[in-house]
Amino acid sequence: MQGNCGLFFESYRAEAGLFNTGFQRWSLGLFVALLLLCPLVLDTYLLSVLNLMCIAVIGAVSLNLLTGICGQISLGHGAFIGVGAYAAAQATLNGVPFLAALLLGGGASALVGMFFGVPSLRLKGIYLAIATLAAQLILEYVFLHWETATGGSRGLMLEPPKILGFSFEGERRMFYLLFAVAACTLAVVANVMRTRHGRAFVSIRDFYLSAEIAGVNLFAYKLVAFGLSSFLAGVAGGLWAHYTLFLSGEQFGIGLSITYLAMIVIGGLGSIVGSVMGAVFMTLLPEVLTAATRSLTGVFPDISSQLAALREGVFGLTLMLFLIFEPEGLANRWRLVKSYWKLYPFAH
Image (cartoon, rainbow, N blue to C red; front, side):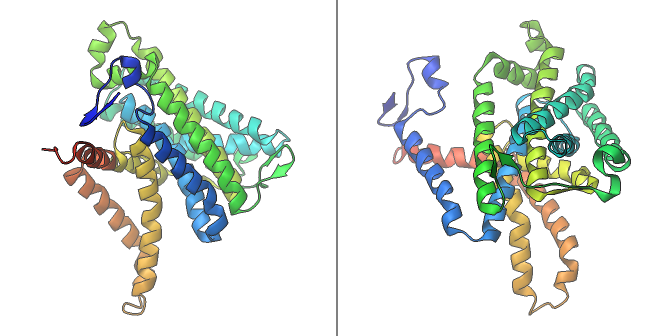
């Protein structure tokens, strides 16, 4: 129940609830309603940014499930997204309905992720990161040279997705599809956190020896974490493929894996809200840099030619500053702000 100076619970079930107060439910409902009205008032460019945010949220929360919640470092997330993208694309090109193709893409990515997750029983920390980096490099080679499935350097051209004959063509229609899948993904991961599997993931992350002594099957749960994370990554890849309508192996390089890793570090490891914040932050950062560059073109005419290097520099500087000054991410800062106002004026 809610007291005058904070929240007090009478059972573990109440404490584990997704929404502890009516204010949280009403605030979320209002936020969702405003998002659903965005396509009616925003232009095509801003809608494209929102669509990219939705895809980034799915990819970020899937990686946070594996790295932030289960503690398994992965540098191959971009490649797993690519597996889902190519699998879903090939399915739709061969006449499979879009929703079934999306699930097939997720399933293919889950199988590949679980295969490369097998070494996680013996490898930990930096050694596991190197193993997943090897998976990234292997899959990049496959994307480039398996021309019958990926189109090689020529890539693949796709058509807008259709569900029951309705075509999601254009930014506005795609927004509702991407937003719905992103919302479902967040709900799935949030509920997984409340199950015994979620608690097992956290115990493995915190101290795997104690988890094993308590009866947690480390190998099985690590494989489940790799499989579920890769499945959601494959769904994100399938959506990306049918949003951009073109696939090329260069889209799923090591840079994409590092970007998603930066999202969960900046947002907050182990936090679902942090995944959303990190995805939004990293999606807006290049757009803000582009707008700033355009505004400075009159003062510095040659700045546009240095935009690529400027982006990489700002990206690295931002990540370094977060690691130094806010290592627990934006989610922790948001939690502190909420705690302050929850106890105000009695906060210490």
